[in-house]
Every structure is written in structure tokens, then in C-alpha cells.
Length: 372
Ligand SMILES: [Zn+2]
Image (cartoon, rainbow, N blue to C red; front, side, top):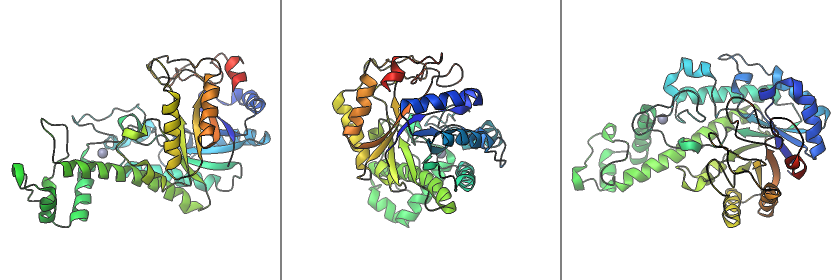
């Protein structure tokens, strides 16, 4: 599937600017628009009460202009009612510090409550949009494991880690033998006694470390698979992807395994981010795109191809004239069949104000618009 798209967040500006924006997006030559990425509270303003009217209206306007839709299941950020009712769903770091409400990806991937609510949202969205022909692809979650969320040390993770070990080894004697616990007087008497391998004075038992990493990877696979299954349970023909983040080499999950849950792979291409003084080299960029293409040995989509400076707390490096265009073309040279430019317009309040787009917040067409 080959498209040229734009990332667009109608929930930021409301419907007022949508007609004009979509006309300008068509003028850019785009034929696809990616929506919904962080809009859980628009789709489900209260627990179990779904409301699709806002995005229905938006999709009607997009269809009038023959734009295709990439619909995102927005589980990377959570509505405040979910946290209010279930504060135990949050990710916990090695010091026992639970993420506060408000960061992206703050949830624990193994939280049964979060898995259930996220799957219910995915299913409700699929039921509502299953016959919407304009939707050509579904993205589940956003950048799994990014921003430190690949590891969680909460009690749920500990309990499920022990279950995983019990299922794998069968008996504690077998585990002790295979892990070599006779040295350093590490013999375990019950599975429940096995700790999580938190940072410590010396190295932990390498088998404990390895199994922990395997368990983390299974946790990410299970999260993506749960959302995939929720969508496919409504209609097996829905085409499903996930947008992997840059820097996936060093994460505690195996992107090749996660990709087995997907129909195709997407990648968010950020040659430069935040306080980084200069972009990555061309060879680094080529490598990351090639790596992502390898997950399924298929052509991929770039779901976020930057057109402006990027950062959360920093005004990052601004791509020089023609530099962002070159990154998009380079990615196509390495097996990208669809490029979606991030994002249509920067925003004037709230999160991601320093993630600049094709247009700046003043909405005037300038060099970046014509370069796109
Ligand atoms: Zn956890």
C-alpha cells in the first residue's frame, strides 16, 4: 500500500479549521491522513461510554476530499478517569516510584485492568468503524516500550514474572540447577522467593537477568497481541500495524517478535530530537530504517517523518532547507513505501508544543509547506 500522508490532530484545534486544513492537505498532494493517536478521551469520555461523533464528523470531511484514513487505537496516553479509578495501573521504576498521571506511556504493560480497558476500546472502535472503507490501516498503541516504559518493576510484573518462571521450569529444583544457584548461596526454596533483578552492588545471576529480559519482551508482545486480537475479533480483514520508535536497538523487547502480531511494520523516523545538537549520520538513518524493514522482511511505512524542530522541553534542531525532504526520500530508498509527515501544524498550548510541523502555529504557508 503506497500513500503520502499527514499526521493530523483535530482534537487540538476543533472542527473550525478542519475544512481549510484538509483543502491544504490535498493541495500538498497527500492522499492519507493519520488520526486519533492520543485521543482516548474523545472516543471514551467516561468509562464504558463511547462517543465517535467527533471523529465521524472529521472522517466525513476527509472522505469528501478522497483522503484515506489511518486510524490509531490511542492507548499510549490514558484518560484521567481511568487513572482516578485505577491508580494501580501505573509503571513503577526500580526505586518503587510509580509514574504520576500525565506522562506518555505511563501504564504497566502487564496491568490486567489496563489490558482489559485498552482491548475494550480497540473492540469498540473496530465495531464502529468496521465498514468504513476510507480506513485503510489501523495503528495499535504508539511506540511500545518508548521513554523507559519497556521495563516495569511493579508487584503485578513481579507476580507474572514468577508465573512465567514456574511455567517454564516446572520445579524450583530444575531452576536452581539450570541457574547455578549453588554458588553464592543463592538456592531458592520457592518460586515466590525469586526477586526482580534490580540494580545492585554486583552483577545479578545472569540467568535471572536473561529471563527478566525475555519476560519483558513477552510483556510487550502480549500487550500488542491483546490489542491486535481485539480488533481482529471484530473483523479479521482489518489491516494492523504498530509504529516503532527510533532507538529500538537497546530496548527490553524484541521488535521481531512484536512484529509477528502485525500485518505490516511502521517506524517513526526521528533523525534528530530534543537537545540533540545535530542529526544522526546518513548511515545511522539508513541502518535504522533497514533494521525496521527487516522485522517482517517487508516494505514499511514511516508514520512520522519530521518536518520541523522536535522536543518536549527543548526547542530542538530545526531541519535546514531540504534536509527533512532528504530524510523522507532517503527512507524511501531503504524500503519505505508510505511516508506520513509529522505533523500538519504545531500547537499553541498543552503537550508537544515544541513538536513543530509542516505549518507553524500561525498557520501561514511557508518554506516547510512547499518543501513537503
Ligand atoms: Zn508492571
